[in-house]
Length: 136
Image (tube, rainbow, N blue to C red):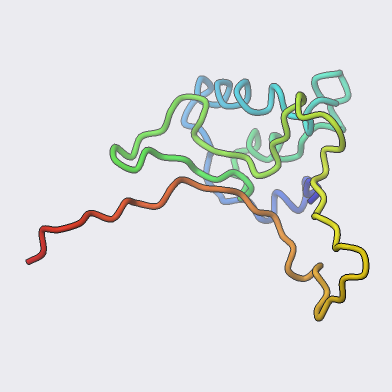
């Protein structure tokens, strides 16, 4: 799963501002992008090699790769944690930033190829708990 190009990210982005003000934007960038392997080149002075999702957000659109996170009870968001980025990889994770699938065991026969079924996956919040009793 590699980062989209700027053009791909721009075309698929939602036409809405991701943050209502600079404080929200900087808090989120510090919390996520400030330690992400995908934006490390920009922090090292190579801006043209930085994360294209940041540029899309700075141009006033919300990348679809950013999953909005709201508190289910209050509907509010925490400062610096309003979205979860599907491409976030912490610099401390080490190794290859590209996740790889578990290889098939030696001698394993396959009925269908894996590639069409592999895609970006991201865990989300827990489902709402089921409440027992109190029927009508």
